[in-house]
Length: 135
Ligand SMILES: [Zn+2]
Ligand SMILES: [Zn+2]
Image (cartoon, rainbow, N blue to C red; front, side):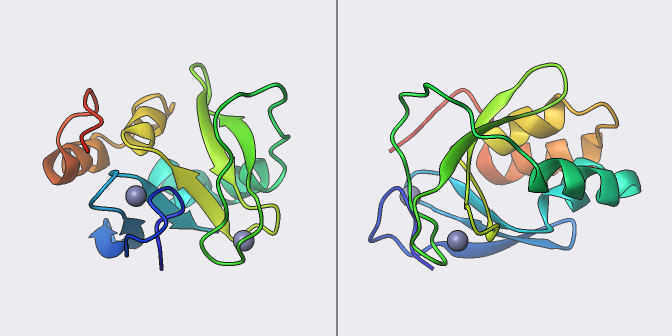
């Protein structure tokens, strides 16, 4: 699967707590298939998170560049997800999954109410801390 930002870069599959994530080594973005984010976000409430993700409204007036779904190539829409602090993500209109730019997964999981510090530790180990967008 090709990275929706770099376009030509093939993403690599990594495993994070038994969840397969597609990671772009070039821009450090992450693609999560439908049904994956809830396993990382709140394993005790996967149904709740799933509903939440499925019904995310489009965030209006966002200037950030639009991306295309790496699966169906449809233009993804912007949505804000999170509990207290919101993170701007890209979501496929056909619900194939969501795209997270560098550091966004860590941001979402760090702001989750029932956060799992093991996952966040793992993420930091895998990708370094979120302050940088290295190219
Ligand atoms: Zn990329
Ligand atoms: Zn799609």
